[in-house]
Image (cartoon, rainbow, N blue to C red; front, side, top):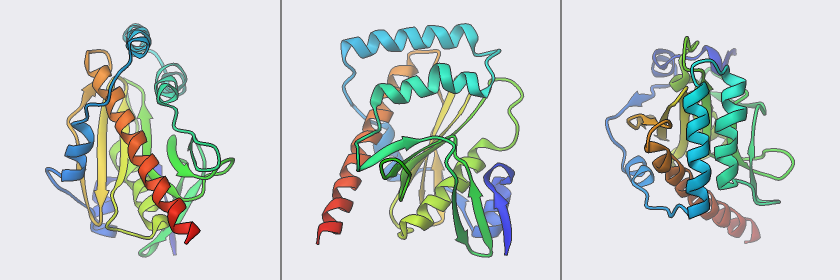
Length: 220
Protein backbone atom coordinates (compact mmCIF):
# COMPACT_ATOMS: atom_id res chain seq x y z
CA UNK A 1 0.00 0.00 0.00
CA UNK A 2 1.37 3.38 -0.99
CA UNK A 3 1.92 6.04 1.64
CA UNK A 4 1.05 9.67 1.01
CA UNK A 5 1.95 12.53 3.34
CA UNK A 6 -0.37 15.52 3.61
CA UNK A 7 2.19 18.04 2.36
CA UNK A 8 2.52 16.19 -0.97
CA UNK A 9 -1.21 16.16 -1.68
CA UNK A 10 -2.86 18.27 -4.35
CA UNK A 11 -6.55 18.65 -5.05
CA UNK A 12 -6.05 16.85 -8.36
CA UNK A 13 -4.57 13.87 -6.48
CA UNK A 14 -7.44 13.88 -3.95
CA UNK A 15 -9.96 13.84 -6.79
CA UNK A 16 -8.25 11.04 -8.72
CA UNK A 17 -7.42 8.89 -5.67
CA UNK A 18 -10.55 9.41 -3.55
CA UNK A 19 -13.13 11.10 -5.74
CA UNK A 20 -13.25 14.31 -3.67
CA UNK A 21 -15.08 17.06 -5.54
CA UNK A 22 -15.38 20.79 -4.91
CA UNK A 23 -18.95 22.12 -4.73
CA UNK A 24 -19.95 25.76 -4.78
CA UNK A 25 -21.86 25.72 -1.53
CA UNK A 26 -22.67 23.47 1.39
CA UNK A 27 -25.39 24.36 3.86
CA UNK A 28 -23.22 23.33 6.78
CA UNK A 29 -20.45 25.72 5.68
CA UNK A 30 -22.92 28.55 5.12
CA UNK A 31 -24.43 28.05 8.57
CA UNK A 32 -20.98 27.93 10.17
CA UNK A 33 -19.54 31.10 8.68
CA UNK A 34 -22.77 33.13 8.93
CA UNK A 35 -22.41 33.20 12.69
CA UNK A 36 -23.52 35.86 15.15
CA UNK A 37 -21.33 34.84 18.08
CA UNK A 38 -20.83 37.66 20.54
CA UNK A 39 -17.46 39.39 20.80
CA UNK A 40 -16.87 40.88 24.24
CA UNK A 41 -15.33 44.37 24.64
CA UNK A 42 -12.03 43.04 25.99
CA UNK A 43 -11.82 40.57 23.09
CA UNK A 44 -12.32 43.38 20.61
CA UNK A 45 -9.44 45.28 22.21
CA UNK A 46 -7.19 42.23 21.98
CA UNK A 47 -8.23 41.66 18.37
CA UNK A 48 -7.10 45.12 17.38
CA UNK A 49 -3.70 44.51 18.96
CA UNK A 50 -3.37 41.24 17.02
CA UNK A 51 -4.53 42.95 13.83
CA UNK A 52 -1.92 45.70 14.14
CA UNK A 53 0.85 43.20 14.86
CA UNK A 54 -0.10 41.17 11.79
CA UNK A 55 -0.31 44.28 9.60
CA UNK A 56 3.17 45.35 10.68
CA UNK A 57 4.84 41.96 10.28
CA UNK A 58 2.95 39.73 7.85
CA UNK A 59 5.36 40.26 4.95
CA UNK A 60 8.40 38.92 6.78
CA UNK A 61 7.07 36.47 9.36
CA UNK A 62 7.88 32.86 8.51
CA UNK A 63 5.31 30.13 9.14
CA UNK A 64 6.38 29.50 12.73
CA UNK A 65 6.32 33.20 13.53
CA UNK A 66 2.90 33.59 11.93
CA UNK A 67 1.56 30.80 14.10
CA UNK A 68 3.31 31.86 17.31
CA UNK A 69 2.49 35.55 17.04
CA UNK A 70 -0.98 35.49 15.54
CA UNK A 71 -2.76 32.21 14.78
CA UNK A 72 -1.95 30.50 18.08
CA UNK A 73 -3.00 33.48 20.23
CA UNK A 74 -6.23 33.81 18.25
CA UNK A 75 -7.12 30.16 18.87
CA UNK A 76 -6.15 30.59 22.54
CA UNK A 77 -8.57 33.51 22.81
CA UNK A 78 -11.39 31.07 22.01
CA UNK A 79 -9.91 28.30 24.21
CA UNK A 80 -10.53 24.99 22.48
CA UNK A 81 -9.64 22.88 25.51
CA UNK A 82 -11.92 21.10 27.95
CA UNK A 83 -9.93 18.74 30.18
CA UNK A 84 -10.64 15.05 29.56
CA UNK A 85 -13.00 15.88 26.69
CA UNK A 86 -11.26 17.69 23.82
CA UNK A 87 -8.34 19.96 23.09
CA UNK A 88 -6.33 21.84 20.51
CA UNK A 89 -3.28 19.88 19.35
CA UNK A 90 -0.45 20.96 17.07
CA UNK A 91 2.00 18.89 15.03
CA UNK A 92 0.56 15.55 16.22
CA UNK A 93 0.69 12.66 13.75
CA UNK A 94 -2.59 11.28 12.48
CA UNK A 95 -3.00 8.56 9.88
CA UNK A 96 -5.63 6.35 8.28
CA UNK A 97 -6.00 3.91 5.44
CA UNK A 98 -8.17 5.53 2.81
CA UNK A 99 -8.78 3.49 -0.32
CA UNK A 100 -5.42 2.27 -1.61
CA UNK A 101 -3.38 4.78 0.36
CA UNK A 102 -2.02 5.25 3.83
CA UNK A 103 -2.59 8.97 4.38
CA UNK A 104 -0.62 10.57 7.19
CA UNK A 105 0.85 13.80 8.42
CA UNK A 106 1.11 16.31 11.22
CA UNK A 107 -1.58 18.99 10.90
CA UNK A 108 -0.40 22.38 12.05
CA UNK A 109 -3.44 22.40 14.31
CA UNK A 110 -6.44 20.21 15.04
CA UNK A 111 -9.20 19.81 17.58
CA UNK A 112 -9.68 16.28 18.81
CA UNK A 113 -11.15 14.38 21.70
CA UNK A 114 -8.69 13.38 24.37
CA UNK A 115 -6.71 15.10 27.08
CA UNK A 116 -2.95 14.66 26.91
CA UNK A 117 -3.05 12.88 23.55
CA UNK A 118 -5.46 13.38 20.63
CA UNK A 119 -7.89 10.51 20.18
CA UNK A 120 -10.73 10.98 17.71
CA UNK A 121 -10.25 14.09 15.54
CA UNK A 122 -13.25 16.35 15.69
CA UNK A 123 -13.52 18.93 12.98
CA UNK A 124 -10.94 21.66 12.72
CA UNK A 125 -7.68 21.20 10.93
CA UNK A 126 -5.64 24.11 9.70
CA UNK A 127 -2.57 24.62 7.60
CA UNK A 128 -0.78 27.95 7.62
CA UNK A 129 1.56 29.46 5.09
CA UNK A 130 3.51 32.69 5.11
CA UNK A 131 2.40 35.64 3.01
CA UNK A 132 5.03 35.29 0.30
CA UNK A 133 6.10 32.18 -1.64
CA UNK A 134 3.80 29.61 0.00
CA UNK A 135 4.88 26.07 -0.86
CA UNK A 136 2.58 23.25 -1.79
CA UNK A 137 -1.22 23.37 -1.90
CA UNK A 138 -2.49 24.39 1.57
CA UNK A 139 -6.12 23.70 0.68
CA UNK A 140 -5.28 20.15 -0.39
CA UNK A 141 -3.04 19.58 2.63
CA UNK A 142 -5.84 20.67 4.93
CA UNK A 143 -8.37 18.58 2.99
CA UNK A 144 -6.16 15.48 3.25
CA UNK A 145 -6.06 15.88 7.03
CA UNK A 146 -9.84 16.36 7.07
CA UNK A 147 -10.23 13.16 5.03
CA UNK A 148 -8.21 11.25 7.62
CA UNK A 149 -10.38 12.78 10.34
CA UNK A 150 -13.50 11.69 8.48
CA UNK A 151 -12.14 8.14 8.23
CA UNK A 152 -11.18 7.97 11.90
CA UNK A 153 -14.58 9.32 12.92
CA UNK A 154 -16.19 6.44 11.04
CA UNK A 155 -19.07 8.41 9.54
CA UNK A 156 -18.51 9.94 6.12
CA UNK A 157 -21.85 11.75 6.27
CA UNK A 158 -20.93 13.80 9.34
CA UNK A 159 -19.30 17.11 8.42
CA UNK A 160 -15.63 17.75 9.02
CA UNK A 161 -14.57 21.36 9.46
CA UNK A 162 -11.25 22.92 8.55
CA UNK A 163 -9.45 26.10 7.68
CA UNK A 164 -6.22 27.11 6.04
CA UNK A 165 -4.34 30.38 6.27
CA UNK A 166 -2.03 32.12 3.82
CA UNK A 167 -0.51 35.14 5.53
CA UNK A 168 -3.44 37.41 6.31
CA UNK A 169 -6.05 35.41 4.35
CA UNK A 170 -8.24 32.80 6.07
CA UNK A 171 -10.33 30.21 4.20
CA UNK A 172 -12.86 27.93 5.89
CA UNK A 173 -13.80 24.49 4.58
CA UNK A 174 -16.27 21.68 5.14
CA UNK A 175 -16.14 18.07 3.94
CA UNK A 176 -19.18 15.79 3.76
CA UNK A 177 -18.82 12.37 2.16
CA UNK A 178 -16.88 13.10 -1.04
CA UNK A 179 -17.85 16.74 -1.46
CA UNK A 180 -16.11 19.77 -0.01
CA UNK A 181 -16.69 23.52 -0.08
CA UNK A 182 -14.38 26.46 0.55
CA UNK A 183 -15.42 29.90 1.76
CA UNK A 184 -14.35 33.20 0.31
CA UNK A 185 -11.27 34.64 1.97
CA UNK A 186 -11.32 36.69 5.17
CA UNK A 187 -8.48 39.16 5.61
CA UNK A 188 -7.22 39.36 9.19
CA UNK A 189 -5.71 42.81 8.61
CA UNK A 190 -9.19 44.27 8.02
CA UNK A 191 -12.42 44.28 9.99
CA UNK A 192 -12.78 40.65 8.85
CA UNK A 193 -10.74 39.75 11.93
CA UNK A 194 -13.92 40.09 13.99
CA UNK A 195 -15.75 37.70 11.67
CA UNK A 196 -12.86 35.22 11.91
CA UNK A 197 -13.18 35.23 15.69
CA UNK A 198 -16.94 34.76 15.44
CA UNK A 199 -16.45 31.77 13.14
CA UNK A 200 -13.97 30.23 15.58
CA UNK A 201 -16.40 30.80 18.45
CA UNK A 202 -19.12 29.10 16.43
CA UNK A 203 -16.73 26.21 15.85
CA UNK A 204 -16.24 25.87 19.59
CA UNK A 205 -19.98 25.46 20.09
CA UNK A 206 -20.01 22.82 17.37
CA UNK A 207 -17.19 20.98 19.15
CA UNK A 208 -19.03 21.21 22.49
CA UNK A 209 -22.20 19.76 20.96
CA UNK A 210 -20.40 16.86 19.29
CA UNK A 211 -18.34 16.15 22.41
CA UNK A 212 -21.52 16.00 24.48
CA UNK A 213 -23.07 13.51 22.04
CA UNK A 214 -19.97 11.33 22.15
CA UNK A 215 -19.92 11.36 25.94
CA UNK A 216 -23.59 10.41 26.06
CA UNK A 217 -23.07 7.59 23.55
CA UNK A 218 -20.16 6.20 25.58
CA UNK A 219 -22.27 6.14 28.73
CA UNK A 220 -24.99 4.01 27.15
